[in-house]
Length: 244
Image 1: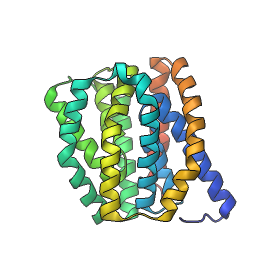
Image 2: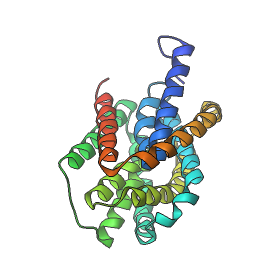
Image 3: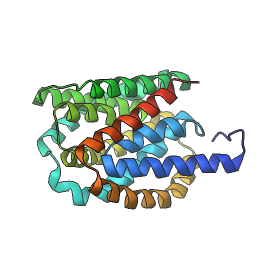
Image 4: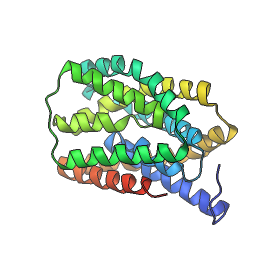
């Protein structure tokens, strides 16, 4: 863990803020934790630590919410995502092991900003089984590579006008598969530390708070404001990552 210039107090405040905001976003949108948490966790953790904390906490959120959301899961798309992700997982860990922290951060920023601009440009495409597999492959690569399975899924579902309930539920179901496997790959090839698991333990109560408020937000946000909310979070995170 890196201690910020303001000391332990500032580091703890940053950590608490990151986990709360990201938990609310993940619960309400189905993608926010990895996109928001991982980049900002790099402020206070090493890359492998930030990614592993993100994977475990995102898995907890998905497991907590899948029961209520399961009826909205697109099971055919989910199966094809899983099949597509299989070759992507080893490619992602190779990228992670070969890149330095600065390159990973820049790569995250470019991925997020490209996604955001395509969404804002009203990017549209037709959903097909082949594209489902390709999206799964890209998502698998990004999960082990930078801890972010969400961007390709969000872009694909938004580009095919998928309802927010189906987007959220299918994403949760996919995360329940992709996160445990990605975590195992990360631990085996990049190692882990006591800091990772201590931080996860401290973060779990914050995730519980985020789950509660995220559920409230999801019930009251309509499709239009859902998109605005999404774009704002993505732009802010992407721009931040491009600055040293």
